[in-house]
Length: 306
Image (cartoon, rainbow, N blue to C red):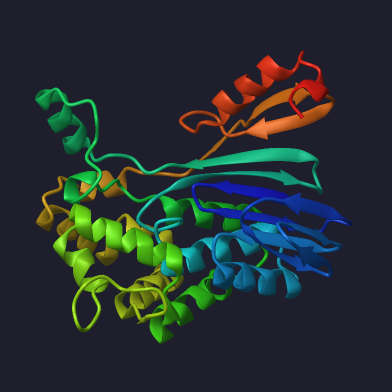
């Protein structure tokens, strides 16, 4: 099973005889070696932008989980250690190939703007959405998508897959360079009082690289997802807390917005390119633009562009 998760910073391969991957992301291989920016493995591989997420997902593969199981774990851990890469307050897309059936599947769970926010922007004549504060918050769909994938193709329990994220949220982890840099930038832009409180050092200012960051509220939220399932994010007490927090920061999210979102299985885009089958997510992702660009190059000799 091969899986790529767009907007969640995760790539996983499981159950392959041999796989080679090259790229800037951290690569961890099962039954193989890594060198430079590439890796070769005989059984499985995980690539994310944080070592803790990659390590947690690799453990899932070692325990017999498949690529979907590993991707779900990686996404939840990233939610804790690199939330700007994969947060349960966001959404995403997932495209993966199922070796058993030979079919490629696509799951759309993109976060959406609250209805009142869209109406307010239209009345104001604005064409660019805000980037910070409550008005920038979208209706979260990430948990719905991850659970939809796990229920249909996963092999492990929700509790097992979320457990590493809960442990890092409760026990803490050293803040990485990327999170520290993004947090400092958000503080400059004014990302909201509640979020600033969560990411402020005891002595003041944004968290720095190497600081131990604990998130007990996040741990409790993840535990609620384990106990009650994804609907706690759209209909339960977590959903009520989300709507209230967004409104307190100047946003317009309602419980109706949260209750209206779903994850959808859709047909992936497909094209042939130089003898290869390429698959991508349908709009609103940008995969269509990538496939169109490749189509333009199809008749250009390969040695002309490497």
